[in-house]
Length: 240
Image (cartoon, rainbow, N blue to C red; front, side):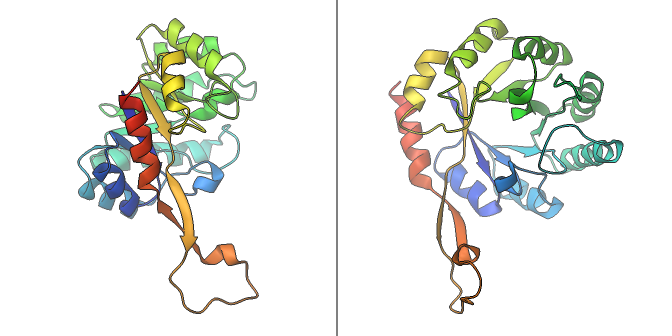
């Protein structure tokens, strides 16, 4: 079984590798669900780690219906990621009716090769997940990140289980959202998933001595990687 960590910095990528993650998904703006990180962050992360590096290709937060210019940005970012030696990209595009944007997704998949392609949790907003599954298989997508169209993967475990059954090893179904050491063994047993996605982060006070009291305290906090969350989850998986 494999664990993919969603991270937003070079430091977090190094820690994830040190503590046993199989792969990292590099993002910016995790509070918005993740957007494409800077070229500098991608390049330095690639130099820093040996495990697989996936990069989210998402020009903004919000919905997954993109303008022509936003689609151009996505294509450019895929080409840049490929130049930097990234192993995979993470995309997700829908049309107005909540269906997979087949034409644009196909273009991105073709542009990304030989990198792997994950379709992210835009899948959880699609109208018919079983139809979408078959479409993504036909498009050659390598994996789907999903919470089973619920807020957490545990809540969506029934759909995840059925998607894995229907996929029949033609594509990887990777549970994500709310995955942790407490539920990952039961989630693995129930769904038969082989890959899991989660964020291991915690917040601590920053190092600035001067903090203007007129501004929220949270602005001075720092998000850091929580290695304990990762090691506990890996240990829980090993006993599954």
